[in-house]
Image (cartoon, rainbow, N blue to C red; front, side, top):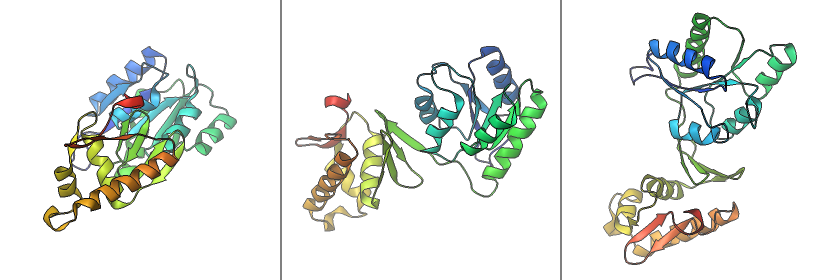
Length: 236
């Protein structure tokens, strides 16, 4: 299952039956996929963001929160294909799965070859013409979506300007470390020598005000004589 010559597909399995999860993982790996299984079912979204898969297989019955809940959480930040796996294959559950943003439903028990065929079909539909899935970056619960220049935190979404997005992307790339003003200005403007130094300050201040509105106060820290960073304070 090669992804348009750009490497293997990454698939995340959210299944609390380790026997089933391991069997599915091994089978999909034979087809050339990179597969990870969630083991901490309190941090499913964190695992999703960290792994950045191109497809998710999710059981409905899970510890803590069910598969519908996690599909809804994923849908807030990504349009990655989601296939539900469940022994509860009555019409109500199938309809619910589709309404929650699922792309397909596979009833348990299932044949592994049938599952891999369905996975390949969904991947082809999703990526044949649209390229790779939207990628995201996460820091302390604040999710930066690289495809649509938005930031999601505590269920609230912030639309970012081009400069705000570039600033945050650079800070996320160096999370916990200071980024110099010079580095930032080169990222924002091709030739910083023709830009007033105050322009960066204005952009940072505007971004801080917008972050505060979604609950991210003091998210960007000033490192005197150096530049800016995320990390430290209440977020560290």
